[in-house]
Amino acid sequence: MIVIASSGGDVGIRQAVQALRDGGSAIDAVEEGIQHVESNPDDHGVGLSGMPNLLGEVELDATIMDGATLQAGAVGSLKGYEHPISIARKVMEELWHVFLVGAGAERFAAEMGFEKTALLTDQARADWQNSLWEYLGISDPAQLQQARELRHIGRLACYTAKILGTVNFIARDKQGNICTGVSTSGLGLKYPGRLSDSCVIGAGNYADNRYGAAACTGMGEIAIRAGSARSTVLYMKMGMSVEEACREAMEDLDALVGDRHRGIHLIAMDKDGNHYGAANALDRTKHIYMTSEMNSFAHFEGHYAPFRTDPKLEPQSDARDGMN
Ligand code: GLY
Image 1 (cartoon, rainbow, N blue to C red):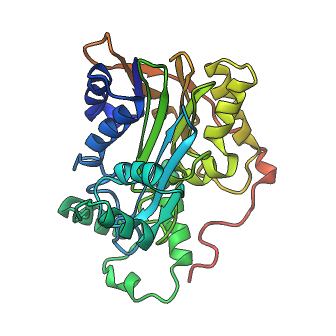
Image 2: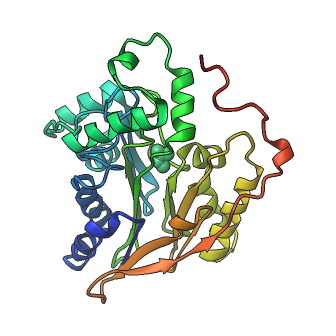
Image 3: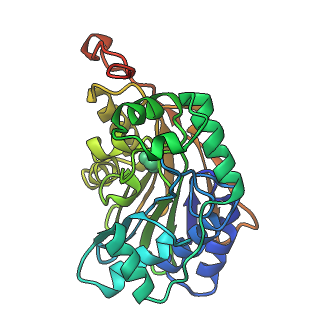
């Protein structure tokens, strides 16, 4: 039995492993581990105290996928609920659908008995206001609330601020079942309604007991465009080791043109519990792992694969184009 997690998962990985020791399934372990991250007020990339969008609203995304059945649940742009991972699990278990967003997801959460929570903590509000000033020169957030158009400022915010945080958990239980979960408040200062890879099955999350599982953190637009989690699992299906599959999925990113901020980190596990990680930003090459025999988690140093896209293919215009 083993659990791996991206950075930030340290507050929940022991509890996730304990869930497995207590006879819980891989799904139970993933939900347990991620819930602790979602409740951590010091983590401004996930759940409570997550970094808000341009308008100061915390919008959460999450997915869970069961490698035994290939069933999945996802929620996106969810406001006012601390545990999107648990609501995603309920989508998977209670509905015929896979993916709910916005008001529909909130309605379903209420129906399932989840309590509403004020997600924008004082600290997150202060960070948001400081970021508006630091990156966009905006001292009065009301300026944005009254703005007729947000697109130029939103584009600039994503290029300059790059405030990202996400958590991935992958667990393998006693029966050899694998589950993956991902949760995030998404890119800080995002355009309202922007969805991340974390809520898109195949992009930021994929699990299949027969081959393995993969999940992403980082700039979600990239993992969505490349279908990174699904590709990694497909590469394992084609016979690659988990390490080769991660490296191949990172190489796929070289073909992506037209976005200069493309840092992602991929963690993956094969069907036997071997794991690996790869990233194109040095500070993200580490993930943590813990088996049921270990007393605490350990760090795993992954592979660093910087982008090699031909600069001649990149658009010459600047992110500030269109600003006035
Ligand atoms: N991977 C999280 C995000 O793109 O917001």
